[in-house]
Length: 114
Length: 114
DNA sequence: CTTAAGTGATACCATTTGGTATCTCAAGGT
DNA sequence: ACCTTGAGATACCAAATGGTATCACTTAAG
Image 1 (spheres, chains in turn red, blue, yellow, purple):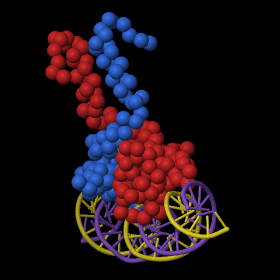
Image 2: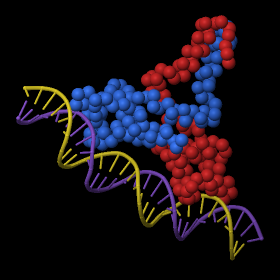
Image 3: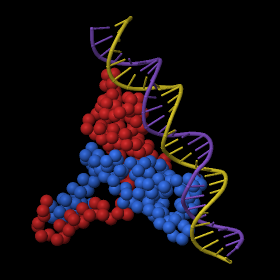
Image 4: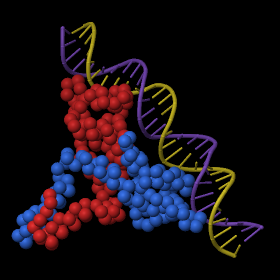
């Protein structure tokens, strides 16, 4: 499996889908509820949800005659880790934060301005 | 602010382009050199490079009659930060690491774990 | 059972996308 | 000058994409 994260990046490639993720970050929603937040048909939203589900970014659970879509942020990890490879190119990463903490350790003046 | 990071995610949405980024992570290359690593024509690679450049992920500098494409990993930051919003959903983030460091700072008993 | 509400599944459409082939332009080597 | 080499620009094509409209299925409510 050369690229298991392709479905993830593919899902993230559309702004509507990214918005849906943020939306589901607030609370799980049915298809109709999600569609209520966009200027497009329920069918179109459904398609996006399929792509998101395809990337594992959401989980769908039936509730009566409804389908509740929930965010699965954990699926973002592979993409995040892929990006992490490039950390080596911008030193000003959290390395800065780490350095700051280390500084407090070595330069132990006992002060901070939290 | 209609999604300034759309070009970035769009660029990342294609596996070939992600491969090109990794490739340019090794060293800057001309179009022909990049194309040499893929089973497609130079023109096709050029298109990908345009998309990457569109997302600010690479920079192009002329060198004689050649064009040298260099990685600009910094452009990944917006996407990375966007993803960071979802950190709140998987507590086992780098918060663990951060906590570990903080522990060493506050609990400076001079011991460490294995 | 009948009716309405929430989905799923197709069929269809316009646009975008990834790719090739081809032609022209610019820069070097001889 | 000549000819080669690297790159840009189109034109063109097949397939994927985002979207709608429509119909069938399933569940809840009378």
